[in-house]
Image (cartoon, rainbow over all chains, first blue to last red; front, top):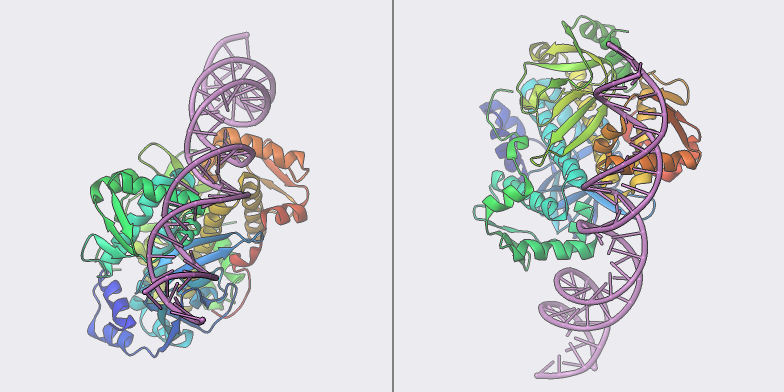
Length: 241
Length: 241
DNA sequence: CGTAACATTGACCCCTCTCAAGTGCCGTGG
DNA sequence: CCACGGCACTTGAGAGGGGTCAATGTTACG
């Protein structure tokens, strides 16, 4: 499925799109690019004249600290923009890294600018995308501040599963998660060793299994309860915006 | 200074505004409301038909956890919208609380809708405001994940001072910060006791003093270095958007 | 001058980190 | 077909940053 249809799917879940709006999106000029795992998709502080829509793979927004520490602020899935906000902020406050092999489509800011000038409604929906990402990141803050390692990991898995499901990429309780534990550590602000023990903790409780890049959620109810997870922040409600 | 002029000031720092754009902002209908310290300004999950622009006081965005834990995700200062994103997301993913006595101006979503339909440029600038807030929150994540208590507090003070300065509310190295340490603890994801010891740590190093609600930054250079602080994420650059 | 809210201190504990080894898997080359 | 290296995962032991509990100062204010 081409990335723009993923985008269309994602927007359609939040509001109705007219035929002309759909065709504006489908006719968006875009340039496809491939990245190997570990490659930087957009460098921190760069000022590119386009935004990247993720078509395949998983990517992360990373903030590097002076002492070499790394912290991811989001895990992006197909259908997400990695840096839609650079359309308005121009300069990126973080880097975007391919966590698996990735395919993106670059959409020129000039094209987004045309949408912005011509369709107020589409503009609001794109704005909504950045707002939803901000809401996800806010939950992330709550996790880092007030949830211990077990709850934090549980919340991460719940969030990810819900988003993949909404994107139509997780029909079953099982999802593709080909990430190393060291990446997970930098997502959740924990050490590699402790992530390992925490994953084992969730396995021991019978809440998940995770092997060879396949994550299965064995008991969604108990996992959500442990994580104090409530998907309301994902704005998955279709209504006029 | 009326809140809308604070808003105008804030937008003007990021791009030039035409006279007609200024007058659209200045003519925005708005309703002033006062809140006492501790009052909820907007309840979590509420769906209000307006957004709140903070005119005076300090407010926080709070996420409550099931176990009674509280985590703030942002400290808002005068000129900030507390919930501009509710214009597009409709339902709020967090609460907004008055941390001191506050005055806000409520701006109806219908009025924002008119701006959105009539001025693509102003819409992009409002969008930029939410994007900048998201960038601030991303730094918050990096802090919670990878900075220890001392660095985290230092980063918080640097961020706050820069934002107040940009808003024209901190001409000197000294700023009003009438917050209790218990609020700070919930901002930074630390315990009250540890915040107390950390504040004393910064004082002992001669980096700050903080008494009777007055925070003085004694050595900005060393404080920034300690915190690994770089204000680029605040988007304080005037350029076409 | 009594009370409430906030700041400070001490003692002890535990969650998570760091350091250091060891294991298992897989692709490559001999 | 096996040896080898690399990478990710796992495990153990010890240390420390930060948490909790509880008491004591301090300040503001009615």
